[in-house]
Length: 128
Image (cartoon, rainbow, N blue to C red; front, side, top):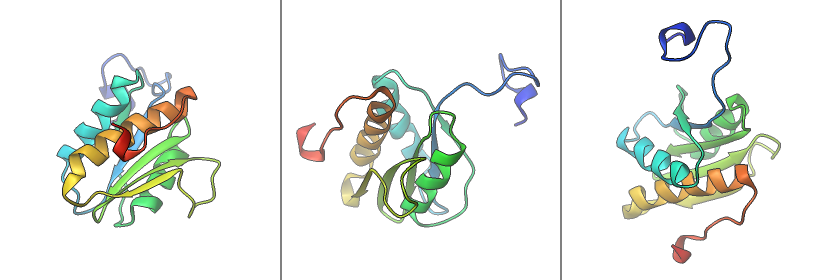
């Protein structure tokens, strides 16, 4: 939807800062909601962005590049990645095999992405 069609955004006003989240072609769209919950628990909003691909790291890198906050999350092929705009493309901040814990992994990725934005230590999977 064009910026003018969204609530509280005029054509001359840029989008509000948010962590960008890209889902791979086969990823369940409900996983975006889990990423958003994790980020919003830390006080940072997310936005789903359209990207094509099946590599979580590449999706996260692309999402980070389009985010005003410089942080992106990619979910694809059973993996979840958090990337920061200034990191090399193949070197995400965090990349996790989601396995049968996809919802938990996505929530934690959202939390870690937000924690990266606000500058506090990241969670490790077993810590939560």
